[in-house]
Length: 299
Ligand code: HEC
Ligand code: HEC
Image (cartoon, rainbow, N blue to C red):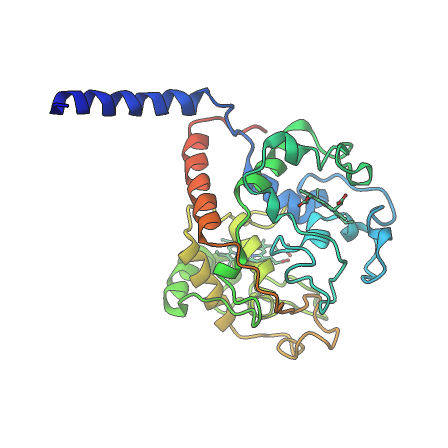
């Protein structure tokens, strides 16, 4: 083959790729909005679940939490997306025995949707609460934005692997205006039982990671994922947040005092899904991101 043929072939293949990609159904759900639904959908869309516990919650007795929070996806599936196989394992006060959602990465849209409309389990039917575009957002989040948190946070100690110094710079750029120099400007708890950024970072780095990536439901807090933060950025911010002072006296004693509402659990089963999956998720996210920038966001 001469050079021209090679060039023509290469151009042809590149064109084919472009055509193929644009012919696929556009992944036009908003995964960031979906992640906030996963966190607390009733706050994000201002729609309340019925009184009482979620029907599946009644199938377990380990966790005696009651009421509206039993309807949150995260209460059953965890901030690390691994359910009982991760941070909400048998040693955790949040233990339910329920599975994680991490297996949804890369699954087909209809497969994941089947878990939300009652097809897979009639007790797991959320269709009365969500519009079609909200379901799409949630499904897009589950398929494209879940990551193995073991890459950023030590699953046993709960410490982030990142660099504190670089995290400080990122914090000053992205968080300081609202949360203050030492994290004491926003209280996530109550006046009597305050929880500040330093407390949460030490008690529950997984929750901090999800909130940092996607923002707080129904608030002005920006999403670091939307701002284009890398895994390294996130890990560094987490490490810096863990260096902030804990301002609640109950922080640091293992969370057993019942003082903080955020329990610290380490899980010893190491489930490393592997770099390939992560690379796929990151690359998938990047590709989706670039596709989404060109499309209109629903809602
Ligand atoms: C009260 C607890 C509870 C809540 C709340 C809950 N789930 Fe689940 N979820 C479960 C249980 C239990 C299963 C497994 C059911 C089964 O195997 O039939 C499950 C299964 C799933 C699965 C399939 C996991 C797999 O690997 O097969 C997905 C996806 C899922 N849930 C997503 C969600 C989302 C999204 C929300 C929030 C809108 C949510 N769940 C809220 C308990 C809950
Ligand atoms: C524009 C202001 C703003 C910025 C910037 C901001 N936040 Fe927030 N953040 C808030 C508000 C408001 C809340 C909600 C407090 C509440 O609901 O009580 C919040 C909540 C949180 C929470 C959730 C606490 C909980 O209840 O679980 C975490 C964690 C957090 N922020 C971390 C960060 C980090 C890390 C950054 C920087 C990467 C950041 N925030 C940037 C305003 C901001």
